[in-house]
Image (cartoon, rainbow, N blue to C red; front, side, top):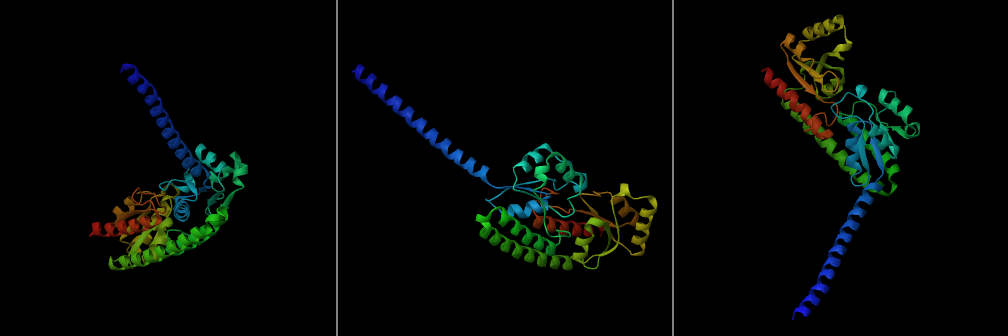
Length: 293
């Protein structure tokens, strides 16, 4: 009986081994197919997280997107990374805001990769994209650009654009209603100039605005304070990407509230989309008013 048992084991083990190898080969083949599909997605390099947010939404599963500037960084002070140049080298397009073309980062790309810079395309949507009207305009413009980049997915992109437009309109109505109920409308403020359009859209009265404090002299700061006092400002609003929390000193002098808002998705990890960033900005304004008493 022992020889028969030995013969059985000699044939059974190699067969089990072959089956295991076949299963492994199938798994590797499937994984390779998934990686190949991902690698074949058209690449888009976005100038900011505002562009990235829209492209990622409209091009879900059809494009691979990366952003040049983190949401918390100031666009004028961000540096070009080697990984950005590498990604841009295989990107179908580098999509930027109209105000970005002459910035140091883009000029660095022109010098380091002129053939890639030739694929830089400004989005035809001027103004501050944190405003719903501008966000809607940017969505329309980027949908058209993505349809050119991925013609096969044009219908899907346009469908997602319509869905996004509906969400933008709904969010605008909801935020406006919350702002009115929370006492934001008519609120007298001074603010970083980058936040002025958003605050005025909410219904605030901006009695004075300022830029980066390191770029202002004492006389200019005194003028801002004079306007703030004359205009009876009750809130000082900084921009996360430029003045940070520097306006807190002005708020203390004025005995006013203080808030820091973002101009880009991702400035705060909890606000990684445009929609969440708008809601968070309103939450911060309401919290600042409440803290002031």
